Image (tube, rainbow over all chains, first blue to last red):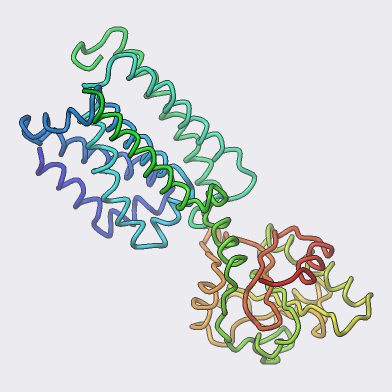
Length: 183
Length: 205
């Protein structure tokens, strides 16, 4: 598991992958960034249980971890963050570190602890935010990223709206019919 | 038993809040363009003094214009959108300056092409005559040595990306250099002559 996580991050960090994914705004926002977070989640699941329980008193009902993930993941929707990752090596490094360690991992450690109401509350806040950010990208009168063409911004905006709807539908589906373990 | 989680959550919110505040200049700059303008307004920066060539083929440097404010714009002549807006603004500035007759208080206007390959001197001349640019108030220029272009754009914070159809997309704005030649103000691309006059007469940082 840990190996898969490291492998995903290493592959994403290779110059050809970075060029391909960061060259297009929608791939940057909706492929690279989520994959980095997913790598963090996979890595966190590889942590032995006896280590994992040590943090539970600091993360009751998964509240602390969820907060960390929400704050850091929100930053990565800000246009300045996307531009920064392209123009500054430090910001790019922060992206590769923060998304696995501060979004994917804490979310994986917190999701199961989170009560049903907490999960609902989280999704009911995060998913509409994705859609609103997407709509802002679609409707913005000017380019918001200096490194992306205006038509890419519109595509990324629609992509965020679609991701929000898809994730919402999936959450409702799982909540109503689904996999007991996760609901 | 809740104590640790409450403490940790409060710490996360505090650190997150402070970091977000810093990373966005107090929520004032969510885009890199806003950040660029804020940073220039806060601390004016020197720009490299590269050799330029105006639309009549005369060489000059921005430093030659020290002593008077200079308004600089970055364009390419084949641009159908933002540059047209910028150049229409420049034409207005230039007309107002010429009619005022105040030679002392004049702002030098310089449009610099970033299309080093496409924009030859004849093309700049054509562009200048299309917009009625006269060398005494408004120069349409190109860098003499294409290698100077990168550092110049970087100092101003201009990002130029090919649009895939032979043109470019770029951040467009009116850049004001103070009498000391430092880049000190950035105005919107649709700034009016009144905006420019106000920016020039208010005290520099």
